[in-house]
Image 1: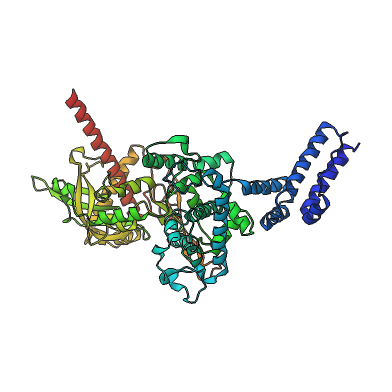
Image 2 (image 1 turned 180 degrees about the vertical axis):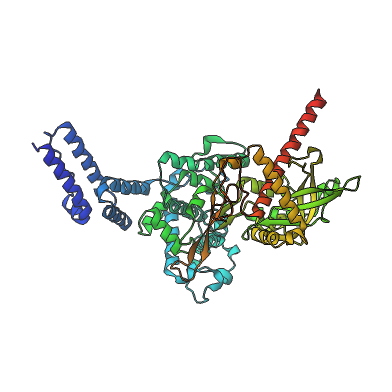
Length: 614
């Protein structure tokens, strides 16, 4: 009988030997470890556990070089957790025998293979895709754009201008199948161009081509798993919306929602990518990496895609995992183009759109803002007694004019819900072509929804003065916050551009009124820093980019402790210094004013309806 403490020592020593000398372990322990029958229950459990790990280790399919490489890297970097390394490799090996092509559900969906033919078709598809990738890797020119390729490139390079891609069947099938699997249109084109080579032309079996496309999608989804952390349950929650969205789209397309999106209820279209992302389907991708004799890890796939020119070194895989559309489809772009060319204006036909181009209008935003969606004006009105009063106008870009609620453009925006602002750039909710038309651009007529409101002496809204109307405006100046601050400081905002001074006076009055009523500023006595992070080109950096960080004191509320020694600290919760930037105070208060005015008008409408009913 082996004492328990000695048996534990032998077990630990053996596991360490595996980590330190894997090759020796494989050759020395070619038969299962013998477990003495005289061991205690606890000792027997530990021995059996090790025996299972050893058995898995010895049967992982060493015929594939990629598996050995995975095992080496994992064990050498994580010697304290050898069982998890073995399990990771075991899971990878298990995917080698799994089937991944969907089942055939009807005669129209010829992408779905008959069950008995799946294995052969999958094998041919994997082999075909691996050959396309390998030939591209062997050819230095295949990762460049078509126009930069040499005419003397070998037969595996992209056909490009020498042979029109639209006549290549493999390319036709691949076109549009990698939507939202790359952050750039160039990356998407690189994926499609894999199927525009002479080698792809030689493949005549369309089912094999389609299978290769699905396998490449799986490979891309496998690459997006780089850096994924957290419990499996949380990871599922993060992508649960993809399942709901997939079923909604499928229900619209098929008129049914059978099987809750399970295998066998799929469709051959771009929406199926959502299902692949939801299931994190890596089976085909794993088999492709094995065929290429590369490590079957997400990081290895990421490196491969960078090598192919599909992804950049800093590809935003979190964005790709999220399922948020990274670009617009050709149909969505075409719908945007048609909306721009449509000159019909229902609000004008009905006599609702008010011409406010006579008013000087300003937009005030950050210098980097590309979507300008609000503007400000001041209108001088004359009373019956000859005195004057001011009406303040807040103009909001009229997106509904360009994207009515039953339009394809509106549907595209609704699926996105919002633009996303990232350090690397903006992912818009509207196609770029129509965004420029929606934006309140200077020196151009623009459609807007305008709110006009007058203030009482104490800063309250005169509810009887509220006007909301579709409008046609013309932005006079596109200003930045710094521009307005300088104009006010130098006096220009009180002379030539007196409207800015009037807006600031109204904003100051409004803020004092809100503070007196217990506004949120009382809970934020200190400034809140605002930071912006951007990725900028840098030729001197090893990867060609640099990180730019801009930190500013918040202009939302509170004292600016760094602005000036002349600004005393607040002694009470309701005694607040105004924001440091007059421009930010101006814009902030006007936006709050518009929200309150809309709310009051809605309240008045509801009361009138109740009175009419009574």
